[in-house]
Amino acid sequence: MKQILVISGKGGTGKTFFTGCLAVAILNKVIVDCDVDAANLHLLLHPSIEQSFEFFGGKKAFIDKEKCTLCGACKEVCQFEAINDDFQVDRFSCEGCTVCSYICPASAIVFNDVLSGYYFISQTEYGKMVHARLGIAQENSGKLVAKLREVAKGIAETTKADFIILDGPPGIGCPVMASMTGVDLAIAITEPTVSGLHDVKRVIDLARHFKVDLKVIINKYDLNPEMSQHMATQLEKEGTEVIGVIPFSEEILESVKAGIPYLKFSQSSLAKKIEQLIYKILEKIT
Image (cartoon, rainbow, N blue to C red; front, side, top):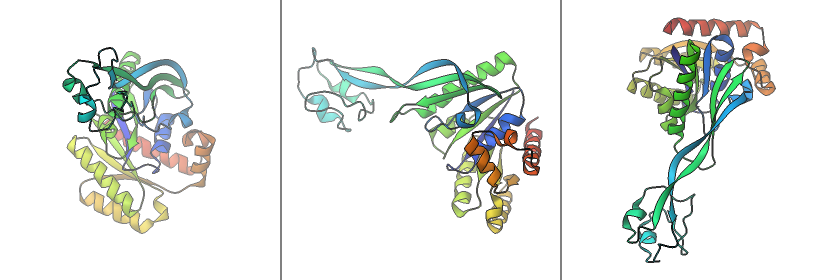
């Protein structure tokens, strides 16, 4: 079983579009949407939820009024101003650091698990999909990504799937790290801009840290051919292969607006070239 992660240094590069292409072209796989903060792969794959689970990502303080002596010690030590004058805890301000519970002389403060979101096992036209919805202002997205990957691996082992396809979050933060560890290949989707080069270099550095093989695809390369060539030359000079390029296409935009993966939406010559690019990627790990 091989794991392929699609990532980008920032949002809007075409990462989910390409994951949708992988979902169509690769058979016998489990699909995971690791972008739990702003999931959007479901807009292309239209999953039908089969199982739903609660996700408890952290703890928040609760003050027991019957035990509280109103001494004010907790309010004084709280660095996040989460405790008001009535000794009630603002759950949005509380960071769950537990300092208040240590300082409380009456042992009136306890920490309760917080429902942070939900994760789902779904069926799509293209196979099983594991995805999630993190609540507003909730943290521990990295922990939720790790849970999704654990569930997906269990499904893949049970069904004897050959691949796990991961649609990663943008950036290089905690959820990206949780998505990247242990994968067989990472595909970074970038654009031919100065910021695109800067962002993809950060992703490359992260992949090197985790000793993950990474290849780059330049999307919409024809909007700035000179920059595309500069990026390819510089990245390959630094040891990172640019495995392919994809031109700007109004048809791709139409497929996204229609909520249909591009390789199902079109049988054009561009679609055939993207299929060939995917086969080239598979050759790298099989």
